[in-house]
Length: 154
Image (cartoon, rainbow, N blue to C red; front, side):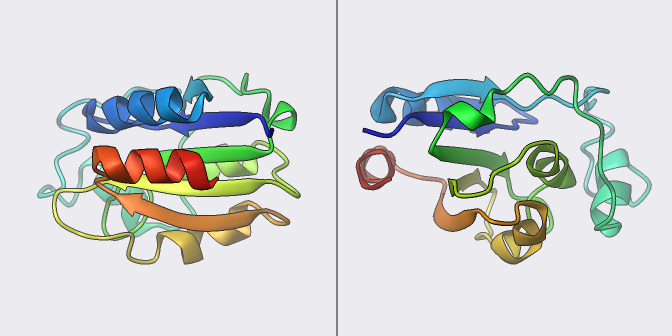
């Protein structure tokens, strides 16, 4: 049986709740991806083109710093990575996280929360950040049944 990790970034708490459910269903360890500088509500105001999240998301090379790099990725075969969908892709802090570790030979299963969009170009934008890994598009806003299916399939 492979060892599993659920790593997630949650700006509002919604993704954290989904991550905890998935970790429990998969019998996985859990790790929160935290920004070095926490996001404020003003930072997350997507209607303000000058907000931190808007500025980061308009520059795909943006790499917000991480609070730590303590995830022991080498111990895991499958890593579920969760995030809120921002501008039809993963927040760039997910790229920072993937680039901070060696995911070669690992399976990365994405899950996300969203106010209305799908994954968009998330997989395409994350692939260069995890060379040698297999990135699988999981589910957006997974139901309890979807969570169980992801946990059992991967």
